[in-house]
Picture 1: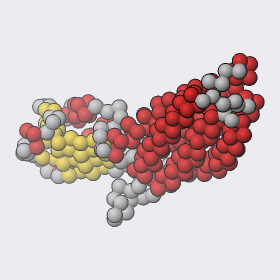
Picture 2: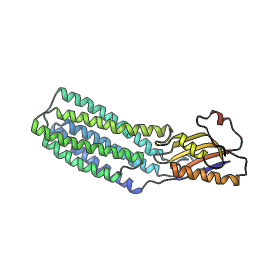
Picture 3: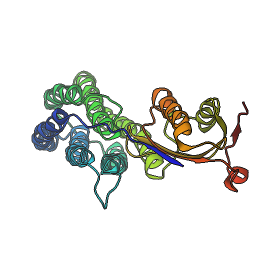
Picture 4: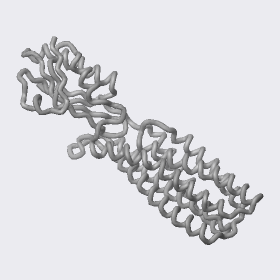
Amino acid sequence: MVGHHHGHSHPHPGKGRVLFVSLGLTAAFVVLEAVAGIRSGSLALVSDAGHNFTDAFALLLAAIGYYLQSRPGDHVKTFGYQRAGVLAAFANAVTLVLVAVFIFYESWQRLIHPEPVAPVTMMTVASIGLVLNLGIAFGIGDGHDLNLRAAWLHMMGDAASSAAIILGAIAIRYTGWLAIDPVLSILIGAGIVWSAWGIIRDSLNILLEGLPKGLQLTDVAREMGAIQGVIDVHDLHIWSLGSDAHALSCHVLIEDMPPSSSDSILRCINTVLCDRFAIHHTTIQFEHIRCALADTSCTVVKHQH
């Protein structure tokens, strides 16, 4: 007997609109910051403009991914397009790392060959960027959706960069130490890499169908094995369809009984998986005789009643 349980979550349509509006505002600010950075001679502003350009690209990917992952499954994409958002998050994070490498190179060149900057322009443009990025980050929100979290991290990273540029501009104005500008750029690049790494790690885990973050295979197997009527749980697999949607498949050994009697066991298993582990999509195969996988599976939990 094979039992199925399905549960689906749908993205909020308002978030998609926020992403597209944020994309337009960010693109406009990129042009302003790039021009101001070139005119003022500030590498920090130019670096941050490059960061903001990737943010605009990130918001575009996030918006497309957010739209696609809300589409229902069909006869070809049977699980739907939930991983579109994960792919967008991964692409965003990789792009961030590439931008950071460029910033590190340019910062090193500026440390070797210092150039004068206009601190007042730096401070003014960075202040606009700080307000803009904080506003967009607030609109997106830091939720559980990996795609939106990647976009949120982009915005918060830019807000931190803008704050650092403001402080750096004040320091340059009163000390004249030009090395502050490339040093700030290096710190911005380091922050970019730090924020991107978590997204790369989490998105790769989902794409490679690893165990969802925060779950332990033995914990899930133990809870299932404790249910009345369950003798053995084996061939247990848990993976993520998207940022929040988790799936499970396994074999469960029970006593020989008619399907109508085992239905209560199936309901109890799905209730435990849903309530305690937020696993809503399950495929559970009941067995009355031990199969070969029971001896080869990496996780075997036996519970005799």
